[in-house]
Image (cartoon, rainbow, N blue to C red; front, side):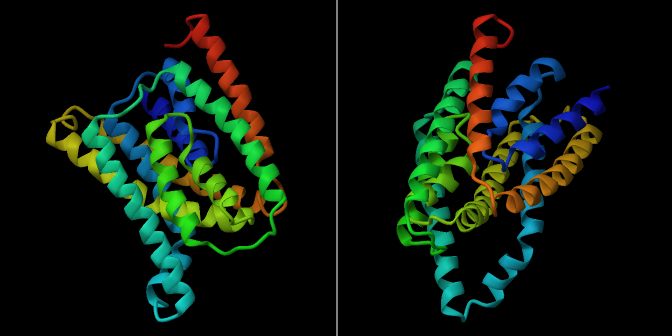
Length: 265
């Protein structure tokens, strides 16, 4: 039964990590019935989702590395690096200050609701801008900052925050904003997962892990995230993000109701 629960949590993580609907919000509900998981488990299923996106974008990543002589590739890669460095530096500062909100239902619910409203506004505002695919330096810097904001406020959704900041800051094209957000997310999430993994091993938190359950969750998360991201990239070519915004608001209200009635902590 524990292996089935691990697979179910892998499915939830795979679907929600890169869709702008907050993996944290969904996992906090799922753990009420499937059991609380260790930090190691959460790191492993997140790593599966990151691997899936790396596989999807491997050609793009290879082009940026091998085609560095081309000005367009150098410019794009430089903006990815700047966004990542901003996140890394601010992330270390936040860690040193110990600023972290609790992953409890009520603040996550409000983050979901506010994020849903923000997404609707961002779509409305972006529709009034001239559509173009260029990633400016302003977009790169704001995406780096947005990743930290999403990390500080559980339920915000890293992908949602970065995509819509990019759209509002000048990249009116949904596909271009999503690609940049996802590409920045690859090194950011690998670095964050690696940091947490090393800390877990150092603290001895890996000693009592069920490695079979971890393996199952990792594989399931990778496969499901691959399918989810592929679907999202096809969906946004001709559809807005409004569906996800409405879903976030409904989920947030549901979480608030569950918290008020004591069904969830």
